[in-house]
Image (cartoon, rainbow, N blue to C red; front, top):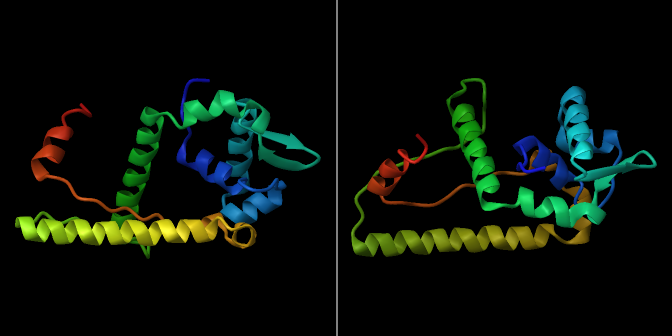
Length: 170
């Protein structure tokens, strides 16, 4: 086992955080099709990331020290994030997809404007962090549904750095 997770695998794994669930509960939480969910659960079981006992799936904590460092390895997380960005971009340009918001702007910033931008990004970071803390409360873990989670991306970079970074992917 030397590979990271597919986005759908992490999606299911995050659904199991906090409590074991049966197939129907996972499907209700994730809204994944039966076939996709069944196949993905099978893969996670084979990799010893989850276990199946008494009709319920749960995170395999007894083998966690074997699989967690691999799935959380920087290169594997980087691949997952790339997959998320590709999906976000595809959804944005899909005429049938509603609700995907994506904005990219190339602008010149004065040093003062750059400070303001950094302050706004810092405020956004704090806002999201506070939401995450609130959602970790046990009462929220049971009521929140994975399929209702929002992905929020933010950041800024130098246009030249990003342009040159595209050559690393080649």
